[in-house]
Image 1 (cartoon, rainbow, N blue to C red):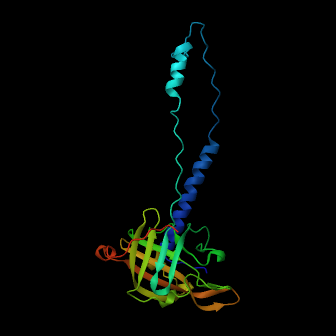
Image 2: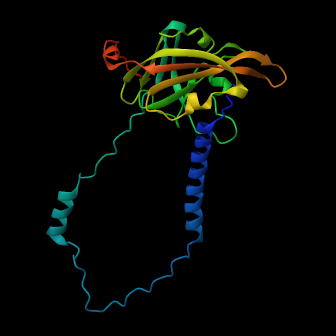
Image 3: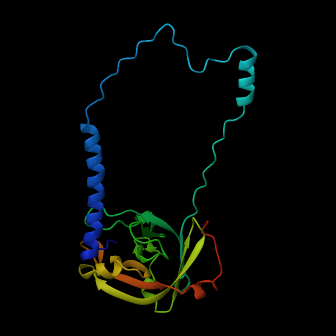
Length: 243
């Protein structure tokens, strides 16, 4: 599945990615162009020079060793963060989320066909529950059969979508507000990726007719959802994001 994005929002995404490349490349080029530092001559050492802190000897040395022994800190094992999870009870979806990077070409990255049973969150969009549009994408099917968003088109306004953030185990509840199918050539970039202060979720998959020449679907199924009010979210059961 390949989503084609148009509009001012997409241009902002591309511009931001290009700016990041320029900044990194510029810093690297500047570092490579900097002249090598000239070797310094060691200052002449006078015979009368004495170190500021003479090395301990004898019983004093043993005392220093005894005091400092065992003071090294052991490295703390870093816990692997629990994965984020997406749950859509009305269509039987409960999967861990992949993190997808910003686009490096004309199309958006999507999960591999080997990961068609999982959905992916674009890490250049808002964290689910934060102000802005959070965008999650998934395949509709593969040659092996249905994929994670095979029944996405069945969602209706009022259905619930849950996203559990693994790092904090916070469970955000979203309410579907609209479902639409559009040709990929008319992808609503502003509605999906546009800037907003509203806390919104967008789910995308493929739909419509299948083009056997290009091996792609011609349309996109897009679901829009808004964050449920805090009073509603607090009544929901709490789950961790760990597998």
